[in-house]
Image (cartoon, rainbow, N blue to C red; front, side, top):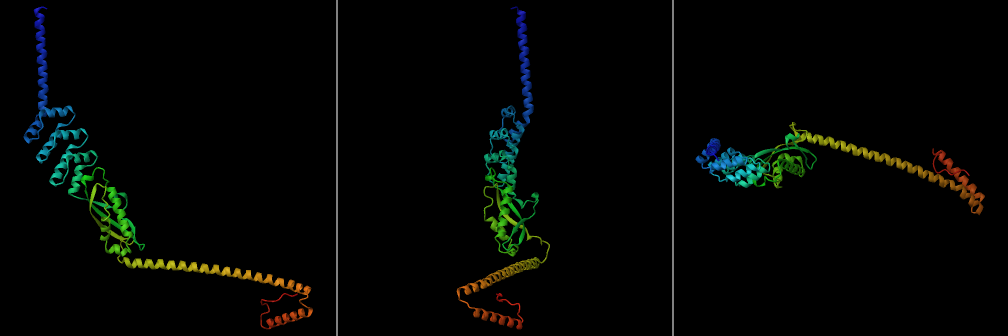
Length: 350
């Protein structure tokens, strides 16, 4: 091979090598420029995230800024978190920033919240930060929920008086039961059921009005927050009234008047029922009288036949017959004189 060609090949290799070196230097410069600020933050805050780890996050399609800021916040708050755990939670689709903020809030409030539990709550779709905040600052839930179109619970005491009750339930999140625990709707339903049952077991509506705290105490004894994501702190009766008379000053007088009117209608209905029974019984008696009269007529119709049989058998003579006729005529005359010419018991004419 000629010497000129060898020299040309050497020059080409040198140019290619210089180009590759410049390219690598450019890539390195870009990486340094891109991650230098994050790396410097990690160095100054002792977040313990190296430059190579930052490049590896980009290769794994992880936002390094989110991991670095979360790790710095945890370190500054005195919490120990592994960078790999944060990366794993990010790759699983979790909200790393929310979890770290929740861990910091729980630590400040002296709540025993483990990182694995926090990430599990976050991956389950719950807002772990909101759960910690609701534990520190309990929430108040209206029962029933006005958003469902009902402002009061409708309950009936044992004396038949309808009561309208509204309660407020103070709850706080149960961090250990957030995964798989029932939601607020279950709390509202259980509290509503307990209030209706407590009112229904009251002898009169006066007991409910005098001691509304009896209702809340009875409801709290039933452990309504079991298998839910919340812990019931208290149940307070916000409003209780008799249905339909909320704006009346003298509820007792109005209810007594309504009860008297109801009793009057009931007595009238009972009297009308007894009158109807009496009329029906009278009609039955009249029908019975007519039936008995028919039996008497049938019995009287047998008398001539019996007399004829008596004549044929010789048990009745002609003179006996005429004496019977005289007695009948005498009886008819006496009835006529006594004003009972059309009376009963008249013997048939033979």
